Image (tube, rainbow over all chains, first blue to last red; front, side):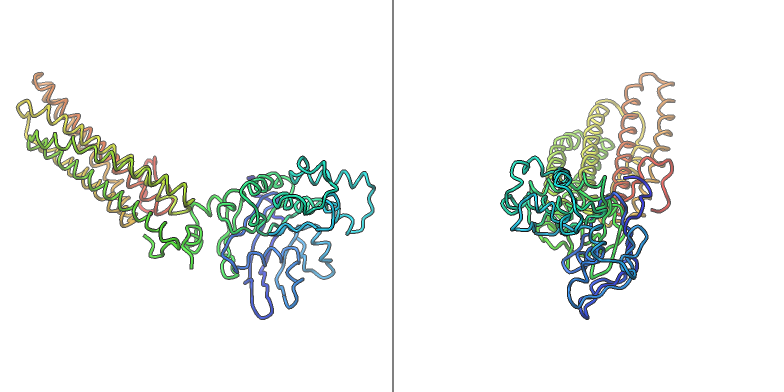
Length: 257
Length: 229
């Protein structure tokens, strides 16, 4: 990890609501560029809500509300005139359950984002982007001979890497991963974790995970959330060896509830 | 320990067991030192031999505690203070085991010394032994109570025993210079002094590990023991 990493995404006094229920309480967080930041905390602590606020996906759910700022390269994504679709193109997301488009081929799944955003590209360009994205997602060698097969015909772990390839195809700057391995077996999990290490060089990663060991293994920084508040944030090594807050210590050592 | 319990009661009880086993081993080692010193001062060969015999029990506990620590590391992926307790457990038992070996060495020198007339009355050695034993007991008390201040005091007391060793060294040298026939016995007594100094060093190691377990900060290999952490 380099010292004094540049901040890529910064949340300032971020509040989020589901109807009358406040899910986030004034969260301040600076996410370093080209690093993996893990968010841990018990169910309902607001960690998924936090990352969904970073690319304006929280507001998709009816009745939700966000206040505060999320700065992407210093500019507020909630600022006037900002197109949320453009934000989501720069800040991609990978979900808990692999969700390839079931009626599309592997090739079309990867190309989908490019086709849906409307930019016309030659077949040769698309081929190149699909190949590059599948290679970056460490899936190319396993599917290169069956690009026309259905996106759901491959294993769960492969489907998740396909979703990562789909996110990478539109060349985002930040990738949010919401429990990307919780539906995967240990081998598929290890492949995704290896991939996270690779992707850090090129992208800024934020990973929500229920597995503290996974956070410890893959991240440079860790955020501990509890009851909608950011309790502690620091270098992963420090958070797992000498946490500064008692709540963090209790959580990571397995003293819950 | 923290009032707060682990959600997994099995893990909680295994960590408690680790604590208890370290204390049990510490208690056994304290007894070994006490008996070795008594065997020396009271010239009691039987007590020396029984003490040498009992070192097996110390060694067995060393292996037991290592096994427990490795099992806890493998099965529970401990973090933060629990991780420090377990890694410290591995190291404390090494120090305790070495102290156990020193008790055996003390008994061996005592058995040799007991074959010859006493060189001089035992004054400095019981005093050094008392300081070393107190340091050991306090380091273990500090471990149980997570008492950083007491642990730091143990670290500072290490200087006292170093001074006593120097003083005894000069005195025994004068014996040897005056009467060469005392050299064998004086040398054996010097070994005894060195052993006691080593016990104090191990007690200091344990005290340093207590500070690390509680505070997560290493105070090892510093020139001056900090006043607080």
